Length: 488
Image 1: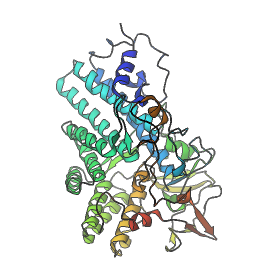
Image 2: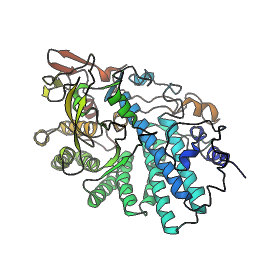
Image 3: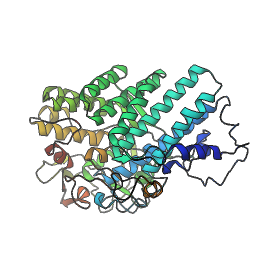
Image 4: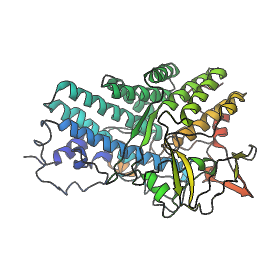
């Protein structure tokens, strides 16, 4: 009988180097997140015959894919938010270069490993492909049930491709293959997500929301508009999340922002009121991947592109109403935060200026060090409907749109992508693929010219009770007309 190595062989032959080590226990549906040595066979009774072709094998494989997908979301959320202006990195095992985007390299200690953003994504897609192509066709279970599980696996693989395209400019998707562009990744994602729409109602709904996200990234206004409207028609308060397990697969953002023995990750002061977003005492807070707020923001961005500012206002206010509501699954909790905010603002009296020219805003910084703070666990924003109504220029609408995206998607791994930063694939990929050499597209970090030098996005000054952020990146994005859609 063949051992579990047949799985490893399949993955090696069908996915890039990042997927050459796979958790057999994850594939079998056992929740876990740590990598193991493939030569360390923990259960020699696990064989090809005991997996493929057995009743329930696809269900077990799908659970493994779900766990791996949660790892993708988790790694993307904590690391990319540090690279962005959302969080400042203090005394963590995260790369010290994370706050200095231009200094990021493919051999970086956090990126160059199977446990990093890139490696987790490639492994997860390998597991999904194995489940879809090998496990499902041989499962003797009910055909319609298996088809629904295949649809869900395609949903997850499609979402992983979207996340890969959001954060990496190029990457190979097959062993020994040349890198493909982010646009090509999105095209593959759309195919998977379209297929997933034929699954059960829950899978189909998630696929519809995911398609809107993918079409926006493609810059396809018509398709993004149609998909976003269709998604909202299905569920105007929808949330789809990656989930975690207290025993072996906890939410890493929680680890850095709640347990934080070393005060690990500190938010930009103007985002202080959003932190810590995930407060479960055992690290099981879910991370939203898809939610209805995004559909409203996509529709607002399309309207700004069309110079239809009245509609843009309406859609942004729809997103605000949903994000700040309490009767639509947007849970509010009271959290006693012991973090001392060392060398950081820690006073309810503080006001914050988004840059030197901006007005002072109260209520953005919350006192910690044992005080209780009110936290919204799915979405929140400081922007009010009155502020949206007062907007005049296209640039101001665009700036507030990006502020809404920053706040509503806080700690979800979306901000770095909005800023236009793209990370390099890990060095191990380059070293083992003859079609990729150092300096090729995708092997270096992409840092647009509008990104401040060094760690400039994290800088602020304090004078009395007034904190001034050095650079308002949302204004920078608006002034540069940064968007997947043309901005007038």
